[in-house]
Amino acid sequence: MKLMQHRTVSGERSVLAGNAGEYRVVIGHTDTRSLAIAAISSGRSLAEEVAAAGVGEPVDIIAALEAVQLLAPIDHPDPAHLWLAGTGLTHLGSAEGRDRMHKAAAAGEQLTDSMRMFLEGLEGGKPATDNIGQQPEWFYKGNGDHLVPPGAALSRPPYAQDGGEEPEIAGIYLIGPDGTPWRLGFCLGNEFSDHVTEKHNYLWLAHSKLRQASLGPELLLGELPQDIRGTCRIRRGGAVLWEKPFLTGEANMSHSLANLEHHHFKYGLFRRPGDVHVHFFGTSTASFADGVETQDGDLFEIAAPPFDLPLRNSLASADTAEVPAQVRAL
Image (tube, rainbow, N blue to C red; front, side, top):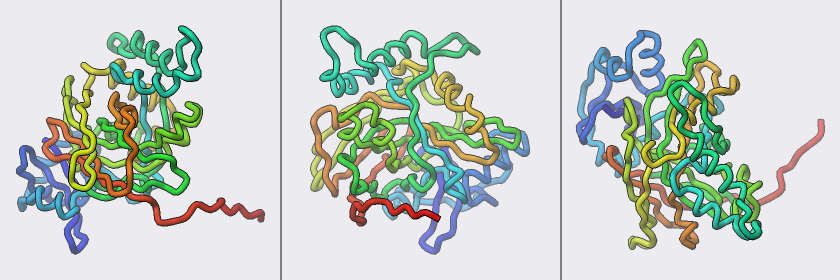
């Protein structure tokens, strides 16, 4: 089963449940978070909670997608309580592009810090059951204000040097009343980043990640398939400018999902009851590594089974000019 969040032209919201193109409104719920809260309270799974609530009218999700009426599959009424974060160097082959970016700083056979971290994850990122493995690279992307709906534009701020796609899977979590992180499911994601800033100095990675991100409209319930094979492309003027496959799922990763989850939620800060977390699991594919320079108007498209709908976002520069932040003393 998959869930979506839908909003009509008049602003009425609903949760949709279904699969394979057939989706119906979940009775009595206007958002995924409230549905998950009800499931935690009742001791049921999300799918069981949907069954208990019942479903009503069908919705044409293709028409809704084209009309930009499908929202991100999770949000929070207070955006400050939705965390965007992620982990990098988690996929087999993901160190190649990063290592090329940093190789100029290395001499001879000396390993870059990125390659060292990747190899440590390759060796210790999939520990035996219930064991804790090597911690991954971790980064913060922002809060709910940085989450862009599917079909909307990703904004490149005036201080950015690049705006590049990163096709990924994101895990969606809600923190329960007792501080337990509950995984609601998985989405397609575009972990939009500034690769030029990162390339200048890898210590600027934190700056390069403070950008918007987008999620595909579908929240996949249950377990993530071990082997996911998708396609990422960039269209310019209606023509395909760049296209490449991407692989994800644990079969293509150097870390287990459980290990990545542990090293995020081990911090008490991230276990505040009621908070929502969107965690990007990383990728090994990016057009920047192939020399692509994105432009305003480019359309990013990410698609992968078992998700039925693609994630599409255009690129647009922010309207505001770059001016120094004005700090005043009181």
